Image 1 (cartoon, chains in turn yellow, red, purple, orange):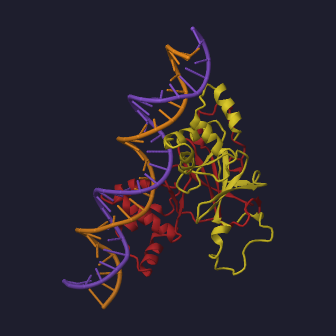
Image 2: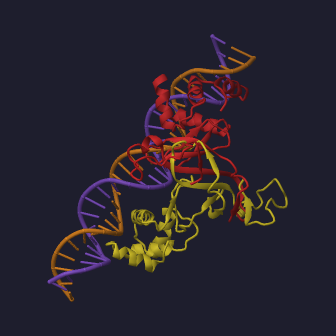
Length: 158
Length: 158
DNA sequence: TGTTCGTTCGCAAGTCGTGCAGATTGACAT
DNA sequence: ATGTCAATCTGCACGACTTGCGAACGAACA
């Protein structure tokens, strides 16, 4: 999503008001890479602005998503998560702690898909599930050393 | 998932009881390709067995999923859907009516993925969203003829 | 037929998200 | 600076979905 300053500009030119609540949320979401839930963001916001309503957080996030400034994600973790990264990317979620990270899959477009007969596809998302490095520590009974490949940032699709 | 007869066998040898409720659900799910929600299945079941509890439907579906006889899917449509097809496949869901179909993507394994650093991936799922042929009729303003490719059953990933 | 323990059922409760309405306040004109 | 108007905020209630709990039930086996 764009910077708080740009969003402020954009909101005003669109007849939307720039309230302190919105400014706070602009700041909290801008370049936020932890994919927070509305509730998590509400907690952060409350620390800086006691009295802010969870309802307002939901409202603002929904508005930002509708404006294309952020993406709302349903990763099967119960609550919707919000992602200011609007690039073409996908996600990996930790089964244990629920942590989410952005991943980039190249070459996905163009794969042959069977069974779409007649469906007009508008969106395709890839979701990886697994165990994050932090949660794997001391819990991976399979290998006493490591199951991590030599190049940890470049793997193959399951 | 396996046939009702096989499941009956399997349940009994595992010390689980084969109740009329379970038998009915075995039948309703076997080779069911419409990815029903618990509630939808409850409606079907109630027609044949008035008095069956929604709680029992949830329970049995959860058990079957835990046994690997079916997959529970969170496709972002609100309620969990259950799929007796345990093959390696993915899904496409209609934004308008919520219909779900199985799709098969070849060549997805092996795609380079960037950003997985350290994550131990256990599962990767691809979800397509769009408009099904039935819902598209009379609603597709983009082209008066058709946007459907010549080979409707074989398309490319978005 | 009797015993046992897994199952079923109904309800309460929990989580997540939205509708509603009155009070508030940002934005702009005077 | 002040007034006006509409957008916004807040709190609460509600709806959808799912699970926890405990008493009653019944499938499996001796």
